[in-house]
Image 1 (cartoon, rainbow, N blue to C red):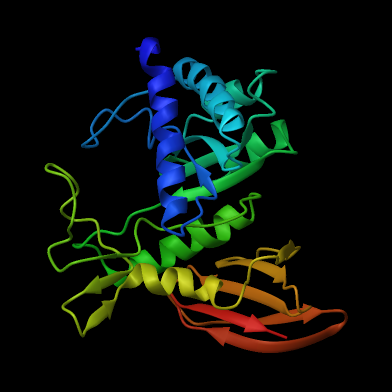
Image 2: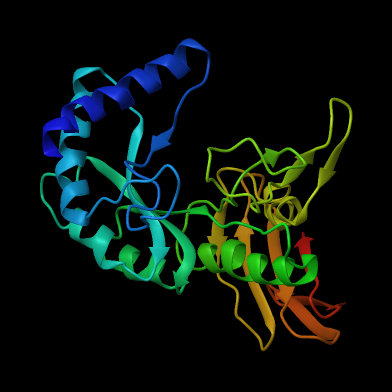
Length: 274
């Protein structure tokens, strides 16, 4: 209900201030995780009209408290780009909102470009994709690197996030009724051991080699070889390639008139640096 919007905005202010008092700076917040999903637990649906109204209250609350944390709208699937577009279309909300966030449980990753092209001065973020405790490592590696890493970056995203950093062997902690199959990047087995899961490797292909401040440079897609390229702040060139096929493929990497020939097995991912 709109009568609680000021109280909800105050909650965000207190949360950000509380985290700061513990030495943690919150860079950005979304008003609501998956606002069109009534089935999360806890959960709250929030229409685009409602979020627009709340963002105006939240922006004012941040301004009054001298909080510079970014406000990022939407934070849901790629099948309803009209939601973030409607918020950015509002003249009052536009300067308040840093950009729009997306998940990929519906729609196509190209929706990020749809929103970027409509508002090229606003960022797009990729903020969540889960891996299941029952799914297959090989298929998850292929799909996530192709879509979450390469796909989001080829469609203007400034980041790529999986579902969670870590959980325990029972996929906790979570709220009652929360996800009992969502697998973190790392499973904390006990006080001395941990296990790296597929999300760890999905992200590591980029995070280890594409530091903050890198910019995407052009690279062409060839057949099954999904890829994305970057120039790092230290002027290194980085190319992430995913072989989406089932057989080994030999290919050339050509840059400034020089090239090498290399190969990747089916379903494999390679990160190349020069």
